[in-house]
Length: 180
Image (tube, rainbow, N blue to C red; front, top):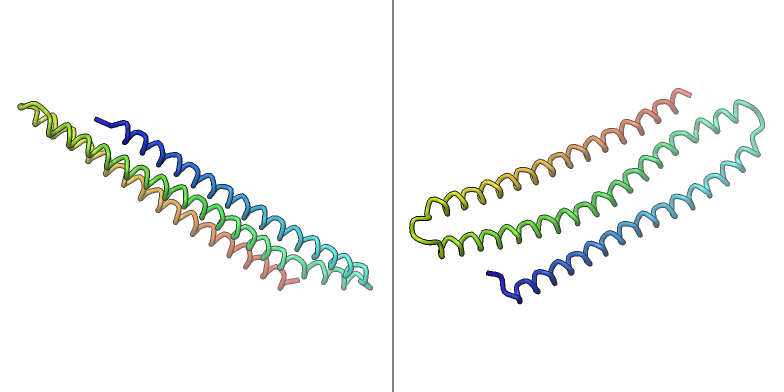
């Protein structure tokens, strides 16, 4: 049986977790805003520099050279921005995952404690029902662990694919810029 103190402690822990996750979410938003402000300032400065360069162009060949020289740095900056944004999202997601896993682990422990308590207080002759219940709990825990492992593996594969695509895009842009 749960006592009033246990229920209050559980609610308090849940509220603390909620506030902690809310703070992490705001930190992620702050980082994204900071990244966007920095990127916007840099872009504005680069546009001003590029405009000045365009105004000093003397012929079409110089204009083409100026334009082709713009693509490689733009692709690299876009890849860097995307990578930074991905890192912010991954970091925030890791915090949420960590909290969810902690909550799930705590809930599993409490439920296992309830099952053990019920087993100790079970009437004689109910051993097979208790064994089935314990087996079911163990199977559910194993299934949850398998799902968590699969999610982690999928996340690692997605990150590797993101890195490969970003590297490929940057390399392709470098090759195109060299051909011009």
